[in-house]
Image (cartoon, rainbow, N blue to C red; front, side, top):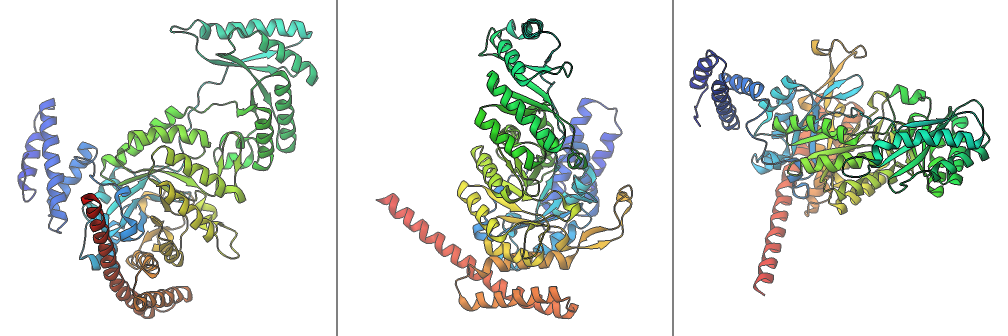
Amino acid sequence: MRRASDGRALARAIRAALAEPATLERQRRLAELYRDAIVAYQEQVVGGRAPRALRELAAAGMRFLGGEPAPCALSLKDYDHARHGPYLGVSDEGSAAAIIREAGLRSPKARALGGGPPIAVGIGHDAERLAAVGEVPVGPEEYIRIRLECCGRILTSTNVGTRVNLRFYRRFPVVEVGAGTVREAVSAAAAEVAKVLEPFRSAPGGARPMTVMIRFAPDPPREDAERVAILAQLAATIARPARHRLGYQVRIGWGVKGQRAAARAIETAQRAGIRVVALDGVVRKQADQSLSQPGLLNYLAPGHLGPLLRQAKAAKVSLRPVNPVDPDTVARTVWNALHTARQMGLELGKYGLFPLTLEENEAVIEQVQRWFSDWSAAPVFFVDQGLLSETEVHTHGDVVRGLKLWLRMVARHGVRVVLIDTVDKASGKRLLREKGDRLGVLGPRQVSDVNDLAARLGVRALWAGGITLPQAYRFGQLGVFGIYVTSAAASARPVPPEYEKDPWLATVKEPTPEGVARAKLLLEAGFLSTRVGDAGTRDAIERGAAALIAALQSGAAAKVLAGAERALAEAAVEGWRLWLDQHRARGSRGERRRARARRR
């Protein structure tokens, strides 16, 4: 392919091609020219030499190609946090991309490394628009702006969405039991069941599985014993019970009334030998406010649903909502968004799966991980929402147990990077709970416990959700894989034109040079404070971090803050030099041991 030191020759060739009639040959030639422009920009911008004309051609090329010429060779799962400390991601829609980049490249670690590749510097621009409801996806212009500012110098990631576009299969067919004696009701319903099952009984290639739901008409009302008799007799009429079965569908009300109706339905199904109960209810206000909740939480609060799931498990009955989620279609909509992120050259794509249940999560994650096995597609667990499975509800005080179940599940499917976050940021929910804090979700010990489990499973956990600057230092001490910050590194600014339509925005947050630099400095300092072998340097880092945090919390003057930052940064630079030397020495000793073992 052609290369040009500047954009002039490429610009002339592109203008000439654009002036030609639209043919397949012209499109192929344009694609090649635009690829040349992007590659030339990528090669030159690392040294800061890319002219403006070449940048504009690269942007036009990304619009034409829908991304970069080739996906990035590395992804975030390649980041070595044991050597280079926790990764820092800073969220922004692109207006502060240069600020994030320059702050990262001036960090103590970058100074100790003498620059270093993006995978070692360990800071990334996280492409997200910060709307009133929280983080929402970016579009093509934001992607392009971010990549042009960051490619070859720092890493890039994005969140393609916190909630999935729920798609459902058709509801299972329903046969309603009407009036008449038990014999009359069974005879009429059995004929309807046989009619429904016929296409599945005689399907090409053999019988297809199907569940037919039985629902009782409200009039006339029937006693439970009568319902049991009718359900049991109908189940006995199923010709191929290995492939076809009956379920029991019940309409329930709100709250305790709905819980009692569901409990009665489970008992009725168990007595009749029915293994599936589907609930149809009225959507709770809490579910309506969040658009939807996972599964049966749309109808029942966690405190009402939990006992029902335990009852159903003991009765060997599957309790489910009437709308069955189609995880295959959900997975493909997630793939579309992640594919765009990868095609744009990003090193990580995060994807939220709210409001899916654990089993629905697994069905989607298995497919997404298979499609992106050589990249970092990171599923997200929202600790303020918890987890619903077929047999348990894990919310509030039990959320850590649900998180651990989820981590074990993603590990089984080879997922190597996940994000643990909060979704309800509009209400002030945040990840870390400190003394007297009602909005934080996890305590420091719980974070450490979960992080240790993830490490044992081979899963690298990223953490986010209102993390403050002092908390960044604490996460650094824990040696986590990485964190994301927004407010801690940002300040308020007027609402720009692109956000004018958001009715709830009074202001927007944009990362500042000082905010990003402090987040990176404290994260690095926390990591070094528990790892550097030299006690004097360790003490200097700890004292410097304490002084900077105290100055930040007291609202000290800019001069005082600047002095505290300089002192901590100098101690951290020395700490990085010592730590990297320690790490290299350990690596050399390990290599010598392996060499001796090979010779033996």
